[in-house]
Structure formats: structure tokens, C-alpha cells
Image (cartoon, rainbow, N blue to C red; front, top):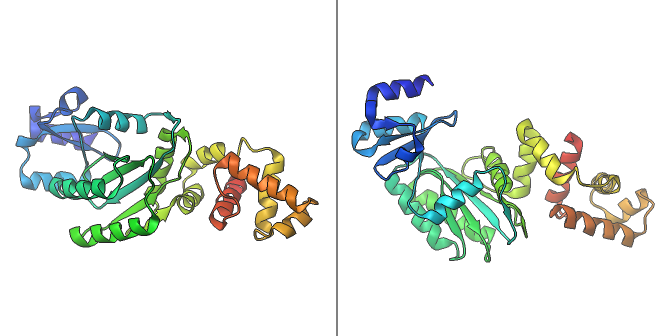
Length: 279
């Protein structure tokens, strides 16, 4: 990487790409756009150099708290199955300084319940793991407006899917990918964000299809298509499928159970219908 070589020339032995070294407290850690991480001794960086580094590299937060480190590692692994209920809430702000980042983290920690865990991934990217208490969207909207006003910065939030159990690492990766497409200064719910992701990013489209569609039997897929084409009208769908209304209701209940998506809602039906079209 040409940028890294230039930085190594500038900082000499003050810069390292060895994680065993740069995870120590005396290093400031950065990640380039290609994913390469490096650390520079904090005492070797002037204020102006700090500002320049923030332009082309993302500041990564390291911590000595073992539980936070373990969660960060789990979320960024290939798979991590959780057998307890969870929901992820993702925050992404414009790059900010470390002091402002600490103040934002304090506000987020005080807003969410004590059963939730805040995981910082950089000075401006945070994920909350909710467990027993799940924040109300309207209250989250008020918090987000207050954060933007108090710190005079733009950002966006993705309210993830509430799961009874599941692979929290895959969930995290999908929702982080969807977060990149959420418009600035907006709070987005899981289903609209995933529908947009399936439409715009072919790298994750296959993962979404695999997670929500491939396990469905042909009968279930036929039901989704007919239900959407009938504008979510149960009576009309039952007529088109030559089913009794109660039989269709059973199929819809079964679909919701299989996918953890409420197919009776407009957002849920749109999401599953989109995945069927691109599968």
C-alpha cells in the first residue's frame, strides 16, 4: 500500500502494523479503506498530523476491557450463534475527535438500558447490543436529534432486527453493510435497509437470499408472491390460490415463524418479495 509506505517513511519506528504492539494504550490505531490496520505512537503525532490522518484513515478504538474486546471479536468473526434474544442498533457519525467520541459514548451508555452493551469500533462508529429491554424508535429519534444538535455533526442510525436467537455475527455484517446505504441524518429500520441492500449490493444479495429464502418450500414462495400481487389482501389471495381463508392464515403464520419477518406488514412483504425476484 503506497499510503502506508509513505507513512512508514514519515514516522519510522513510531509506526507498526503488528497488532500485538498497536493494541497497547500508547498507540493510536487506524484502518485504511482497504482494511489494513496500523498503529502510531500517540506522542509522535502532532495535532495537524492527527487531522490529516483522519481524512484518509478511520480511527479505531482499542480498549483494555476484555468483555468489549470479546464482543468486538465475536461480531467481526464469520459466525457467532446467540441463544438469547438480541437486537443491534448501529450509529455512524461523521469523523470526530476522541474527546467528542467519548462524550457521545457516555450519552449512548446512559440512554440505553443497563442490560445493553456499547461496542465502539472507531471514534465515530458504534453498535449497541440490546438484550432484555429494547428502545422505542420515537425515543431513539429524539436522542439522535439531540446528538446532532449538541455536537453539530451529521450521522445516521440503523435499528436492527429483533431476534429470539441467531447468528449475531452474520446479523452484524449484514446490518453494517446496509448502514452504508442509509441516507445521512436518518434513522432507518431493518426491513427498508435490507430491501435497499438487496437491490443495490450484489455482494450481500446472495447472503440475504440464503438466509431468508432458500429454506422456504415452493408453497411458501408461491404464497409470498400471490399475497404481494393481491396487495396484501387475504381474501383475494386465498381466492387466487384456491385456499380457504383459514388455510392461508396458517401459511402466513408459518412464514412469519420461519423467517422472523412479519409478511403481513408492507415492509415485510416488500422485503421478501424483493428477495424472491432477485433469487
